[in-house]
Image 1 (cartoon, rainbow, N blue to C red):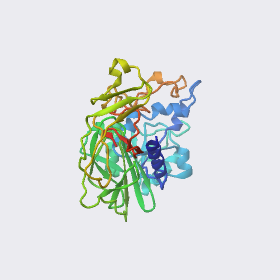
Image 2 (image 1 turned 60 degrees about the horizontal axis):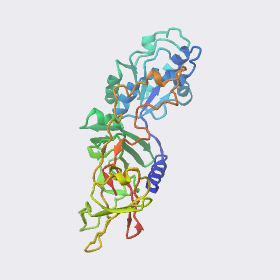
Image 3 (image 1 turned 120 degrees about the horizontal axis):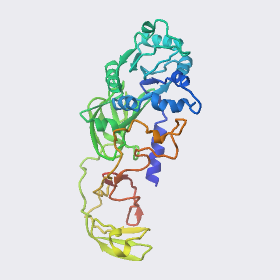
Image 4 (image 1 turned 45 degrees about the vertical axis):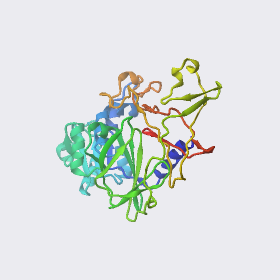
Length: 392
């Protein structure tokens, strides 16, 4: 569908601009992984499934931070880049050279935090000389939830959610791109339920605007980075762009305001093309509930005539009411962050033949219009798109 591919292409281009602005670097315990190798289990990737707890990732993301993975070799070659926070999952071994780099990072204003325990061994397995002094400056927290709270005491989160619940914090995700003269935020609801939140954007700019992911237009209202109250329908996304000189959004012409033009809830006819059946219908209509068309599969054409007193100005939308979350959606199962043993191959790598619980490519939402609808007015195709709360 052109609307879907256009949406993907538009956001793919936008989210390649500038560079990532992730605040947290998570130090992967690769030396611990190598030390734990044994016949049949020689994969660092597989070892990280258990060494980096899923609860830790969930807690940090829900707190409003995005994460990049880093290891000791990358620190030696590249340093810490633009990251301001270093996070150590439960770790035993760490190279002495890496600890020296961490101390330099702390001296230049960075922050480091360890979860559960501090390293006590060098990468070769020998005791760290003066371990307490070697790890000085790294804040120790007991668990994932405490770690996420401590991060907020160190550095303001990139995208803080206020006045909302834990479910919303767990299902709303974001990406940030930093450009020379702008900050771009992509915010998405990954669940099948409508959520409400107040957002705080940690941008250096004092003003911005919201862009429509559906067509790229700027929405006619100025956005401040603090106290942005908004709603996200199931699977809906929004784009916020902050800059020093935000261009004015497209304003609605004077004298125009959203209002209903006509009630189209009844007096429709439907033609099932392949079956040669045409009939008057009463909404809601489901041909699977009628014996003659119970097994019909093919094109259906719905028609409704409407007369307007005058040609309306501005945009005209066809709103289709209805829709509800599909039962059984894996919104947030209790063990969502932990990978079951049955999902792993003997070497610890995820089994590609098993689909993990999660939305994946399945939109767990029963829309009033199911797979697709092509809308035309007076025989001319209309620009269209779909939203969980209706269709336009």
